[in-house]
Length: 126
Image 1 (tube, rainbow, N blue to C red):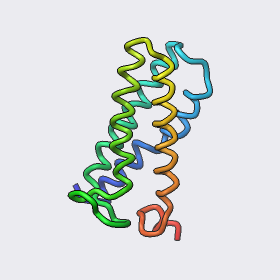
Image 2 (image 1 turned 120 degrees about the vertical axis):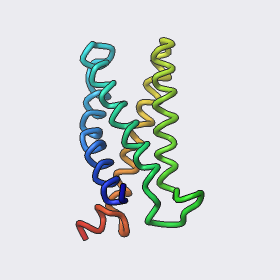
Image 3 (image 1 turned 90 degrees about the horizontal axis):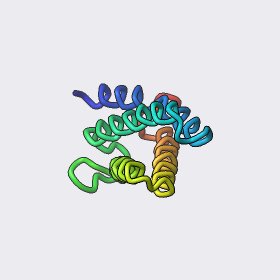
Image 4 (image 1 turned 45 degrees about the horizontal axis):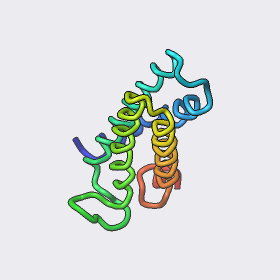
């Protein structure tokens, strides 16, 4: 796949995540609806993070292979998903909440960088 195709797929997957994540953070926890939407949210985050790892960094230096600083958030996403699932399955809801909050904050930081100069969405609006 070309960069533009990967970027569009990544954007399509991640687009609902800020709203869905906010809903999950603000609403009652542990309900069947929370669990169902949480699985959808985690899948969206997982797929978008994996896809982003195939997209070369276009802003700033490429540190390792074609990855740049922004890819650290992709790795953080993968680690956070794993640990959040591990902790919720173990019944450690406090740690689950911390990793889900960190996952959401990381996504919002990446979202903020999306509109910077040299990035695809930044170039589209400038």
